[in-house]
Every structure is written in C-alpha cells, then in structure tokens.
Amino acid sequence: MSKKRKRKNLLAGLGFILPFFILYTVFTIWPVIQGVYVSLHKWSLMGKVKFVGLDNYIKFLGDKKFLDALWHTTYFVLITTPLLVIMALILALFANRPNKLKKSLRICYYLPSVLSVSVAAFIAKYMFTPYRGFINGFLHFIKVLPPDRELQWLNESGLAWSAITAMTIWWTVGFSMLLYLSALQDISPQIYEAASIDGATKRQQLFSIVLPLLKPTTYLVVLLQVIACFKVFGQIYMITAGGPAGSTRPLIQYIYETAFKKNNMGYAAAMSYVLFLILVVLTIVQKTIERKGAEADEF
Image 1 (cartoon, rainbow, N blue to C red):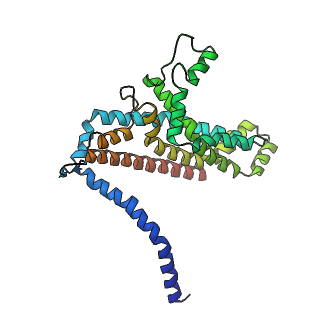
Image 2 (image 1 turned 135 degrees about the vertical axis):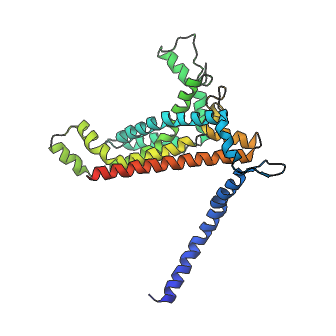
Image 3 (image 1 turned 30 degrees about the vertical axis):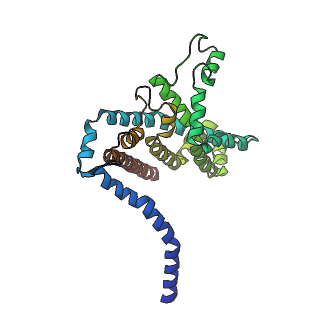
C-alpha cells in the first residue's frame, strides 16, 4: 500500500474518531479535570472561590457523617452483592434448562431491569408500606404476622435495609442473570454428555464442571455489582431518603446533600474523588485475585 493511500486511510479513521473524541473530552475528561480543581478550593454556587489545597481531603477524616455514610455504603455492598450474585446464578440455571417455559422465565427474570429507578422504588415503597402494603398483608395471610401487628419496614433501620436490599436484587438481578445465561450457553453439550457417561450426577456436574467454567463470568459480575452498589443512591433516596435518622444514608447521598443543600461544592468534590479512589483500589484488588486464580487453574 502506498504512503498516499495509508495517509488517506489514517485521515479517514481520524475523521470517524474525532466527533466521539471531542464529545468524550468535553463531557467526560474535562469534568474530571474540573472536579479535581474544584476539590482543591472552597467553592460555593455563589461567592468568592478560595484555594484551600488539601484541606477538603483532610476534613472528611474527622467528619462523622462522612464515615457513617461510607460505612452504610460498605454495609450495603457486603449484604447485597453476594445475594445478588447467588440469585443471578440460580435464575440463570433455571432459565437455561431445556423446557417450554425457558423463554418466559428469561423475560420474567429480566423484565424488572427495564424499569427506571423511580418506578422500581415506587413499587417497592408501596409493597413495604404498613397496613396496606403487599408484604405485611401476605405475612398476615400466612399467619406469620399477628393481625394486630404491623412491621414498620421503612421506619426501622434493620427492616429498612432488608427492604432496600430486596428491592435492589429484584430490580437489578436480570442483567447479571443474562451474563450467566450467556456463559452457560457457551458450555458445550458434549462436556455434559462426557460427564454423564463417566457417571457424574447433576450435582457433581454443577460443582465440578459448571461453576469452575463460570469463574470468569463470576469475577465480572462481582466487579460490576461492587461498583454499582458503591454508587447506590436513587432507590435509597426515594424509598427512605436516608432514614430513619440517617441510618441508611449512603455516601453518594451525603455528597449530594453537601454540594446542593449545604452549598459546599469543594468538599463534595473531594469526597467524590475519595469514592473514586476506593473503586479503583477494589478493582485492582479483584483483577489481581482473578489473575492469580487463572494462573492457579493453569497449573
């Protein structure tokens, strides 16, 4: 290929890339750079901007509300991620079974994922409402809950976390289920046939063949869910608004309140970069574990 032809192809490629690169720079790269600049200043929506250096990053170390919000977010990750991964795997195994209902099951499992956070949160809030909500009504119907008692799901910290966790799993499990389902369909039927000929039971096939082959997908699902759970905000804000008494307020909500209710953009920006750093560290740790696991499997 001539130099002129190569140059022409290069210019054509740059022409296709340039619009995306401009938009990505304006709406992603520049806001990140601007955020770092804001985090180094005392910055409000009105008034003078004052450079404070790393003061905003030092301030949160003694901020009890920040530490509480960080713990609430971590707690949500610890209780939601394992349950969601296990549920997604179980649903994928059911949806992968060769029967007439498999297409209907896949639709039913994935359908909640298409709902917006506001719709999903409204449904959950109605379901867990005392006196007229479905959950308490069902518990009364099966005689688990006495007729004269109502569980205050959204007014007690432990029950509120249970409601938020259940809603999040119901709403988001469909996407992870699809990832597992795709991985299950990539497993050759000949592997199952060979295992059956060797006398392996369905249980042995699951633990000795299926789960080991699903390791890469499990790593991916866990990583995506950890990141998503650390960024939780919408459903908690719409269901409990961080209550009762701030016991379910996540870090993103505290950042939002600091920025737009307390008018302290600099401190909010600093906290957002702390969250970003936490996610980066967790991603590196998980990728390291994944790489070491892959190396161990090779041997």
